[in-house]
Image (cartoon, rainbow, N blue to C red; front, side, top):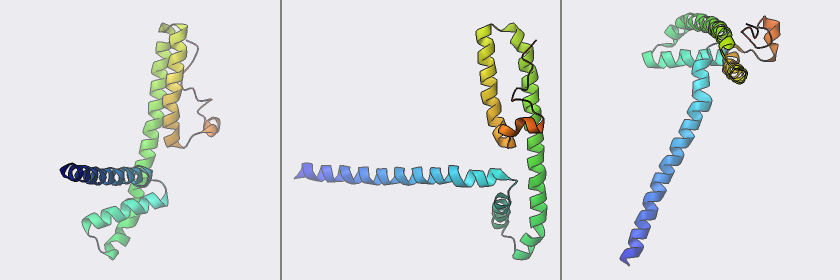
Length: 150
């Protein structure tokens, strides 16, 4: 009889921890999929409203204060986005220039690997800039920000 009780207690404990783990996983998923993109988006209206509402709730602003602050918050977010975009472009260019100086020092195998690593890194940065297949249209060449010929 005592063994059955321990088994029930163990199952109950497992169920409680399992439910907690499941709730945590769902919360993490929602956070990663919904909250982060809204708070990091900056340039779309939904993200701007999310940030505005967050600031308003943290500061317990009145509706009148929110209406007065909204254009200021949106303008700050627009400027922040443009500055970050300019930084990312400069970062790509600087890294590409540094790589072009390093490439002549590498063997052919290292040279190819360095190009692949750079392109993979650059692809992540391009995603932020909203650059995909349109790279050439924006004057960024065919995706290589470095000279392949020393």
